[in-house]
Image (cartoon, rainbow, N blue to C red):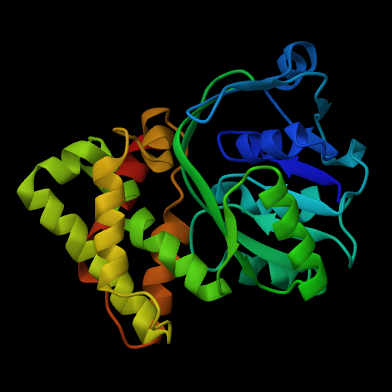
Length: 302
């Protein structure tokens, strides 16, 4: 299958780079890095081995890109209002769109715009950041869960096989379960690093904030259970705590966005899941408080 990467940053650039290195045809959409990457290629410094993609098939607009079998969206969800226009030149009924984005409700909203599109959720468990033009630093982890939202089984299996053949630790997880599994880590750590101006390791080294992080994780577990997802339990929250203990000290994407005066992904990461849980009769008071704090900080930035 051929691939287009929409959002060649820490996530899209990393997975697109691996797919390209494995011999797949990969086209990259770039903006500020376009000229640099065309001249110098895409560099990935990785804990699993550094590599470069030379002669990158780079584009500055989706209007100039040929259709691909798969479109991987690595944009921040604050830009999703741009997706319908960006995707129009790239997709037809046979195209698969993989949303490697944070949050809840992303696929539902894309489905509203493109009811016949084949959609897959991509939930990356990775520490990766963009550190310069065409330069990505992959610090640790790198697996991805794929949740089938509206894709044919045959096409989904081919996609999964491509990822695995590229050296990506990819596995299928039921769609809604995949989204809420990622939220168990994302909702506590993204917002708390912003609200307290800190990093993941320091949050867990302090007993009071360690307990608060765990309590927030359990609110996500409770919300998932209320929505009928019984496979997410306290044992998974324990595993996420242990994983983060072992992780290189890390500033999540929301912290990097805040520090660099970029919009934060509050809607899909907090507002939407809190609302979905409330519809199921479950409240998330600690995370609702964190959402309010993030909205306050966002308005001060504005």
